[in-house]
Length: 217
Image (cartoon, rainbow, N blue to C red; front, side, top):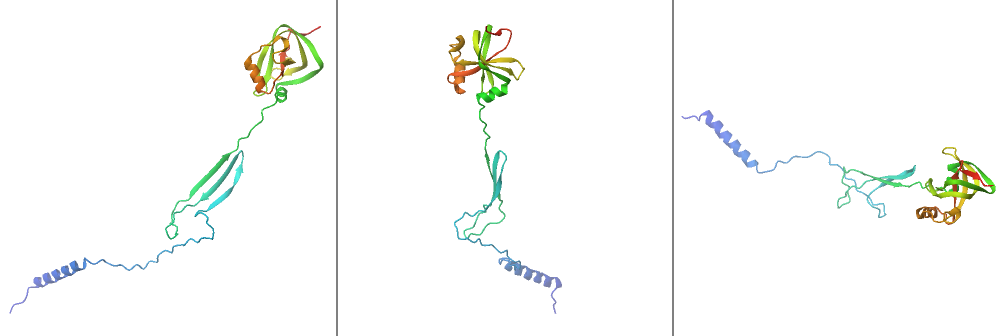
């Protein structure tokens, strides 16, 4: 009587288990998912054809600058109208700068800031320049003092005044462009600046007071 060896029995069982395992490898392993699926939110049209974005307006701040800020959400949508989550909101900033314009000072305004203690004569006073003395003009657009020409001999002064910069005395002189006091062919550039400042025929000039400027007898 013959008994099978123990190791032969274990080899047969191992081979059978291995074949069963190979047979099941072709089938996918199915796992039961008991986790709850997230609910998707359906976007509802409120009845108007408005764009699929929202904006929150913040009141403009005006300190020389007008500013408006809006937060816009532009989330992409699927074909069914469902918003795709985890999209980044875009910050939209609209800035409008309003320049503060200042009017150009008039001749009288510029004259008042340049001179002080103006004393007008009741009638023009006849003065004499004993030596050539510059007749000056204050351009009201930029406050620049320009030389019209040289006075030599008699001229008419309409007021006495003081320069604020150095407290120097001066005489106010009315000048008809290219006509008075022998100054009949002054610089064309000066004439153009006078016209650009709004003076077509006459300007108000001045001459610095000094030993060479005396009152005519």
